Image 1 (cartoon, rainbow, N blue to C red):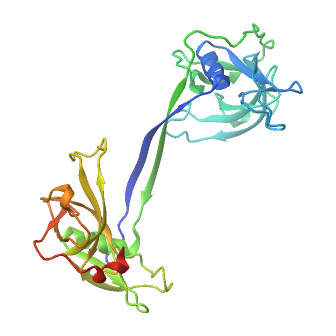
Image 2 (image 1 turned 90 degrees about the vertical axis):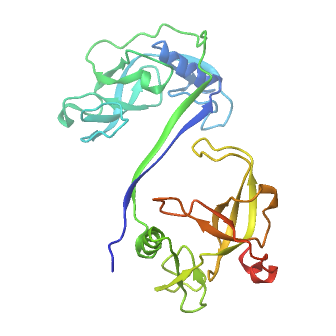
Image 3 (image 1 turned 90 degrees about the horizontal axis):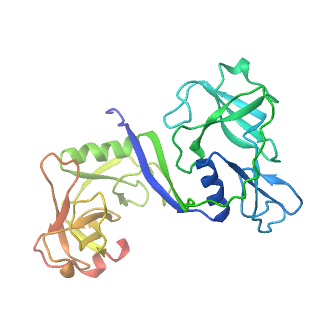
Length: 313
C-alpha cells in the first residue's frame, strides 16, 4: 500500500468583537497603566471584571482600581514557550490575586526557573513599552519584595475609550487524510476521480471515507467515477470572498459524478449563471498543474431525467 499522506495545516483568522462598558474601561485602563476591577453587590472585587455577578447574575457596573502588585495563588512552569505567548524564554503561568481584588488574574511570570516560583510569592505588573488597550499591555509579572502598590482611586472614566478588539485566532496542526482519502487525492493528481464501494449496500462514496456511514462496514474496493456528472442542486454566490479571485455572481453546485452514490461540490462555469439548472450535465475542467478540477462546464448533453438523481439531492 502506498504511503499515507500528511501535511502541516494552519487555520487562521482575525476575530473582531465589540466590548461593553466594563471591558472597555478595563482595556482602556491597561493602556493607561491602570488595573480596574468591578465590585459586586456583596462587596467582592472581581479582576478581570465582568458585567454580571457570577453568583447572583445581577448586573454590576461599579469600577474599582486595584494595585499593580499581588500574590501568586497557583502556577505552572512553561519550559517551552510557543509562538505568540507572552515571553520567548521559559516562564511560569500564574494566577495572581492583585492587592485589593478577590479573584485572580491569569498571566505570565518572568522568573529564572521553576525553583524561583512558589505559591504565595509577591509579584508586580511589568508594563509593556507600547500599549494599545489589550491584555498584552501587561507584558508579564515579575518577582517583587517591596511594599504593596497604592491605587490612585481612578474612576474608570477615560477619553478615547476602547470600543472593540481584534483577537487573532490560529490553529497549527498536522492533517492526515487516512488511507481512503490518500488514494482519492493521489488519483486526482492523475486527473481521475475515485471512490470506494460499500460491500453491503453497494453505494460508491466520493470522496471515500474508508467506511460506509450507513452500514458501518469498512470499504476497500476502489471505483473510478465520472468524469461527467449531473448538477443536483446549486446556489448563486453574490458576495465576493476576500481570498478568491472569482467574479460574482457565480454558481456553486452539488454534482453527482456518473457512478457515484452521492454528490460532491464544485463551481460551475462556461455558462451564464442564470442558465444553470438541476439536471445540467457537466464535466471537469483542469488547469495546468492543478491537483483538482478548477470548475465544471456543460457537456452539451441533454439534461438528466430527475428520477436519475433524485436520491442524490
